[in-house]
Length: 321
Image (cartoon, rainbow, N blue to C red; front, side, top):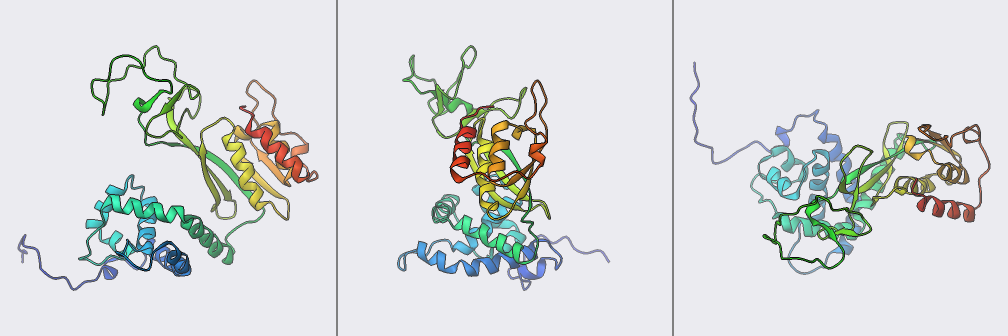
């Protein structure tokens, strides 16, 4: 018998969001892990909020929503709020009931900044690592480091000379017509008016230059889990300086190894690794140059002093190669 194509929506639903999520959905174990961590962070949350006044977005729900934004690559808070409005899976993970209203995107962003200023994100990450370490998922000997460009949310039209502009005013102050032909733009003479910390950078030769930052991550090699991460201003030495900083946190009591691509094959970087008891497994860069990876880099070597390490780190930070 053919069913009727009825368009009238029901007024009540007796099926909870929990029942609609499949038992084997990958978000279920993540939700369990996240809830345990949020319970541990409850005391830290209490320090960030006043005991009186209007209730804010619950920090537990806010952090779950931010995690969904990362896992599903939702590019903005406004789109995230749109997903929360109609996506039952998102509502279940965050902890919203079917009739709960979603938050305004601006209010959500302001509440997020409060958590970031309170170092809650770092505390959350540290407890995720603690759970992985407790289950024996982390290697404490073998690591891999890499970096990438993070495109800034700033238009190239905002990249203007730092000197006072000359000439007639733009035709449209909000979205002016800009002619870049014949103009040499440099990070030394220009700056973005909407994101002053972003720098004009290119990933490699032949690629277009963009306003960007550099993101860095240190992975352990047993299960490929991230153990350190940071974001810096784009520069020629940023990847190597960030790698030394992150490795300094893990290479404290024993010799470790680190793998890296040929962008890390510089003499100063390899020497600095030796000083912190790190054996470099770096891809050799022999394009119009000699590699810094030799027989000594594969040996054990002796650890240098803290002063020698600080000197080597300063040298790497000022080495544009």
